[in-house]
Length: 57
Ligand SMILES: [Zn+2]
Image 1 (cartoon, helix red, strand yellow):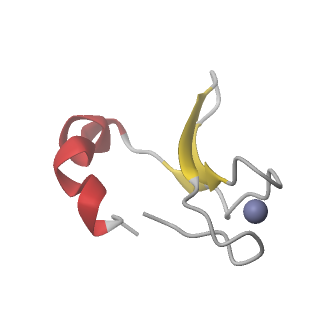
Image 2 (image 1 turned 180 degrees about the horizontal axis):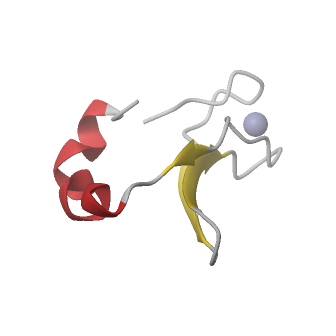
Image 3 (image 1 turned 90 degrees about the horizontal axis):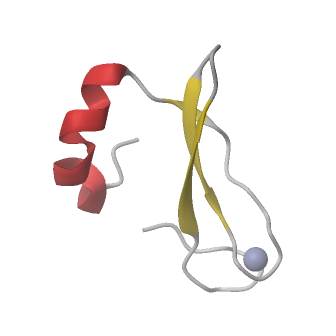
């Protein structure tokens, strides 16, 4: 879980799937600030649920 440094609230994970790339990032629900976008590999889609609590950076 990532905390927004500005608002000090938990950020929500956003996943974006396009024809060119799959990526995920964290977005703050208050200020809509975003972390850097991380590329999602297909195999990660299967194991990501298990790693979610570790941040999987
Ligand atoms: Zn914020």
